[in-house]
Image (cartoon, rainbow, N blue to C red; front, side, top):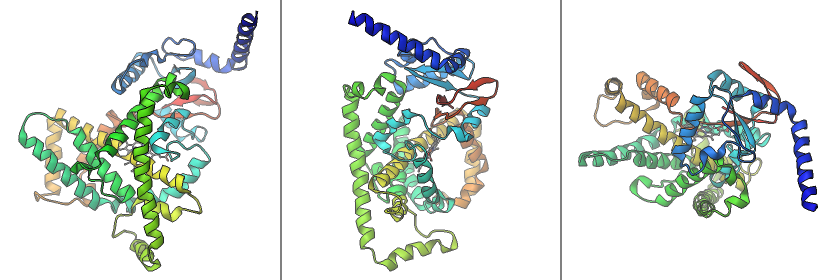
Length: 402
Ligand code: HEM
């Protein structure tokens, strides 16, 4: 009797839910999309897949169905967009500022930093952090980039001289992590010299687990995720990255407190003529913000966010650009000729001005980024109903993916 009553109650609740959300379901039904089942939606596509397999499913979806398409990831409904005009509407809309809740899974690496934060905290952090990403600051990192690239080229040369094939990606990955750690934390990790390799392993593992969790809705449930081996591995890897970055932050903080005022001001004088004589390390900028705006956790989160967001994306883009050059030898030749004309000597350092002379090379990189985006999917929440090209009105409170 009680069971019957319970089933009846659930059924009534379900009907009530359908009725109160009828607008949304009407719109959702109009969008093309794969077969969806209760609770799991269409996420059966992702069962047992690796990250590579997940990308293939996304490719299958966007080539099989016309977009915008509706996709039930478990009980969450996503509207998948691929048309640049639609993506532009979403990414520039004041009603789609918040990233979807699936970005919460980035917290295992990036804490409550820019990637996971929602408004109004995101806006506030962004306002304080914007000066840390200025062009002048980027230019101050050129000596670091030159040094690390030279190390990478030497390592690649050693492998190339041996002949045969090898995976370039792991050399590029180590190089970009060394760069990001120096520009963000002011610390030479020497991963390219085979030191601190557990930091690279931990970072890569965290990014891999994050992607699994995002696309497999059964892992969205904390209690299910906690039953998996991934959870324990994530915990171990988070400990490695957080304690590493946390230690560096605390040491820096102590050094800064002990630094004579004149020395601190000398650092700031560098910027009077607009350019910096020494690299403007991200956490040094953060420490200047401490107290009034950022507490210890904010600083750890933002520093971790930059490391997490910076190295794999850059490494992938470099690897894809090299792949493109290998696939199109005629363009490789043009890039080679351009590089030779800007840097006639065999050994050279690259300045920011030099980069602007590499016009054709830049076009190759931009085309590569268009064809192989390092971040192929972004998810935003719409806070109110709005229009897309040729699409019924998308109801607010539902998730959009661009
Ligand atoms: C070619 C390399 C890169 C690509 C393709 C790339 C791409 C992206 C994309 C698409 C987003 C938006 C993600 C989303 O909303 O889902 C993003 C955000 C972000 N990226 Fe990158 N990125 C690259 C390199 C970097 C580097 C080198 C850093 C830092 C050193 C960085 C730091 C960030 C941060 C902090 C955010 C969050 C910004 C915010 O919400 O205000 N990225 N990136």
